[in-house]
Length: 278
Image 1 (tube, rainbow, N blue to C red):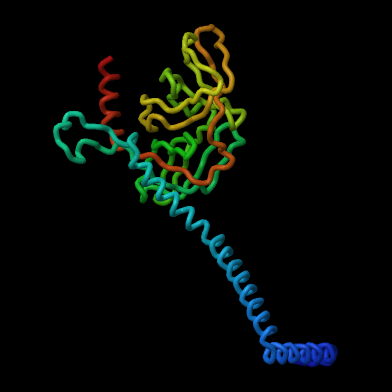
Image 2 (tube, helix red, strand yellow; image 1 turned 180 degrees about the vertical axis):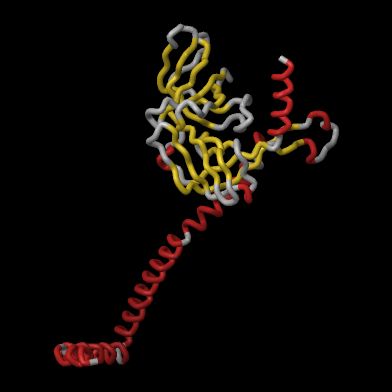
């Protein structure tokens, strides 16, 4: 209280000046139509400006929630695209929705942690078994392949990144002619991967698009990977080794989709029987 009194005493003339100035302005506005109109217009303009600033601030604060809604909606929409379904030609005479059976569903998740500067990189996602995530599910982004789910708890899961030297192998093909090979990361630049096992008679060009093939039980066919940047023959001269510029920049990842292949166990069972018979 003593500090307040000292402040008022110290600035009493200035405060009196402000009081008288305010009184004068009030009298001018109250008794003059022109000044009253100008004051009201100025007040409304200032109020609109402040309100607009507050609205923008509120929208900024709610961006995370809006992004989550959009991400979940994208996961749902991905489950509706044609590549997520398989046609049951045995029931082609039935004109109903049973003609198509969904083979992939997608779970939108947020990345909690991510590494790109190690030989073996991992991601940690904010969803787990309670959301239907299991080990060995594929993980993709809006731009391409990201990795494979490794360990799963109730609310979290770890992902072996595509940037995981030699331990992550993806069956990839050229979009224009479907020739396929094996894509791995060489442990160096996080922006590039290596595509091998491409026969030397295959025709391709720099800039051609590479995507996932149908031979994978992890990813849907046609998920983008990258474009051809460089090429050379292997040491024996029979196959090309291609340097692929990845579409996805792993240093900027924030949200991804976990791929649930609904026919995976059925397919795995048949593939095991084939291997046992050979």
